[in-house]
Each structure stands twice: as C-alpha cells, then as structure tokens.
Length: 156
Length: 55
Image 1: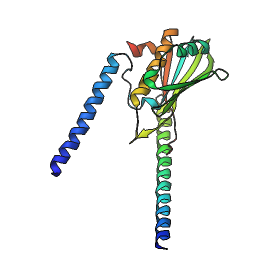
Image 2: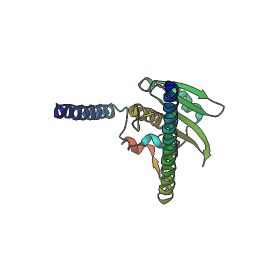
Image 3: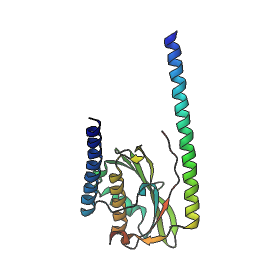
Image 4: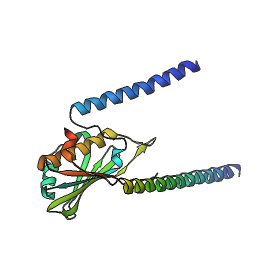
C-alpha cells in the first residue's frame, strides 16, 4: 500500500513537470515567452532607447495583455506605468532619465507572491516581460538592455 | 481555566514561530543581497542589444 502511494506521488510530480515543460515549449513556439534563466523575475531590466514615454504609453495602451490578467495604471507625471496582475505579481516601467541623447527606462517586478519559493504563475511574468521587450523593439529596434539582479525583501 | 491556558500557550507558540520565520527571512535576505553585491562587483552587468534575445 505504501509503495503504491509512493509511486502515485512520483507519477503526479513527473506528470506535472512534463505538462509544465510542454506548456512552456508551446508558449515559446507561439512567441509569447522566451527562454529566460531561473529567477529572471528577480532582475531589473534597464532599457536604453530612443523611444519616449508617450510612445511607450501609447504602445502599452494598444497592446492586449489578456494572458497576464493585468490592471494597468498610468502615472504620466512620474512617467511610470504599473501593471497589477491577478496572478499575484506587479510590474512597473519607470522613466529613469536621459543618457547620451537616449531615454532610459527601468522595468522590474517589485512584488510577487510565492508558493513553496516559486511565483504562482511565473509563465505570466515571462509573458509580461516579453510583451514589454517587444514594445521597446517595435518602437526602436536598436534598444539596448542591461539585466541586473535587484535586492528585495521577503514578507509573509 | 484549562481552555484559557491552552489558548494562551497556542498564542505564544504561534508568535514564537512567526518571529522565528521573520528572523530567518531577514537573515536569508541579508545573505542573498550580500551575494548580489559581491557578484555585481566581480562581474558588472553587461549591455546587450535587446534584439539579440529574439534571434
């Protein structure tokens, strides 16, 4: 009885892993996500681009983020956009000033909730980042990016 | 009386567990952030073309 129970548990874990991998592969093929490293959501992405805040806001308004289930709040005074997802994470784009005649924007996930140390829906976080990167590329294909681990604080 | 003592003990134990968890989280955060600082100093993040991620 105990052995059967153990086998069922292992089968469920392996099944969940295989299903998750297949789903990720499908999303990559559809272009909705790209293969990112483990813990990519801990990184802040700094984009240097010729795009202006107004152009980015316009592109965000014209994009459907239905896969990510987000409410979008615009703060034109501080040139920032906040995405509040019902998948238990937030994301922001913030204007960080001008540098060598180009604009610098910082994209990050300031908060996310985890289950056993992993965000609930990390795939939707990947989708969000992919949407944002594609927005930057659509406005300025010469956009450069610096990816940097950000410090954060655990709360419970 | 017994019930009240039981409730008080459970409340104290819960507070202790929550406190220990908070301390562990703080210690973990501190170590992780120091590691991030150290790695960033050794290998500063490099600029890349965003389009390279989609080739």
